[in-house]
Length: 353
Figure 1 (tube, rainbow, N blue to C red):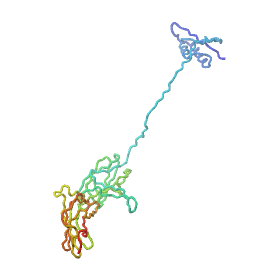
Figure 2: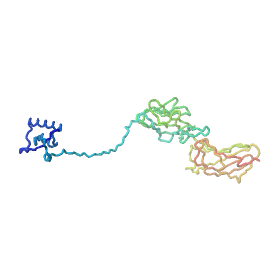
Figure 3: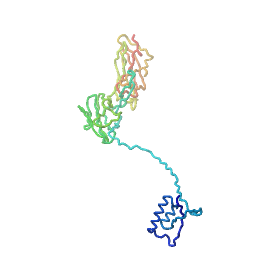
Figure 4: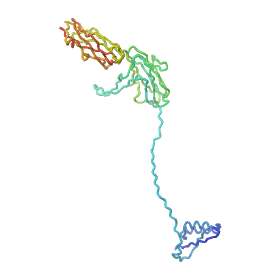
């Protein structure tokens, strides 16, 4: 059975006395006994003893309850739980973009891009480049190539009508292959297209010459962007060919492609016309009431599929011998971008007798 010890405090009038070698040996002995469970004391009393304030004495084995009245329990420290809630967002470390070429733009709307259409004949999708934009006469545009700064590119502009290539340094089309190499961020390029008498088509495309990565929507040699340079267009008014009739005299109007003919015109855009047809045999007789010709009587045939707009007509049909005639004025609004024929069917106005 372990021994029980009591604690007795002794007060010193002069405060704590210095701890000598004997006291130190006593403290070490008491610590050992506390560790072995032979000595009962509070933490504060042990600390006070180490400083010489009190002394711990062994007591007899017969310890009574009153002998334990002054023994204080060890202090209990309470630590409250603390909950920390953190809000955070995990972001990817940005990876620098390199070697990408993303855009090709111009200061004027000159490019026509291939678009996908459904070919009902073959029941499959095909790429077709329509003439949504065009130039008439000469044109100068600044083109810009956008992408990661410093990325190398190679661009080619080819006149496929005359088999020539554009020299960006000399700003002219020349015989023999030519290309322009540059880097994104170096500024725009000047593209000058000279006037041409005939319609001319130009292909614009990039070529891969290193580790550059072109956007999928940018032009390539096999799927180029197109610049359409249109010539002056002619709208021809005449009789259509029909059995027993031969078209004779015609009238024409020369104009810029796609121009609105009744805009800004001193005569409101009225075009005077006189057209004739000749019967191959017999005599012609008029078969319309007073020879009145309406706009709905005209048949429009355009090479580009964009028929001109007829605003008004003031036309009269007449017959004399083998010759049938329509004369008067016709007013057109927006014209076709290419040559167009405005036809009249002779059988609608005349009968061969």
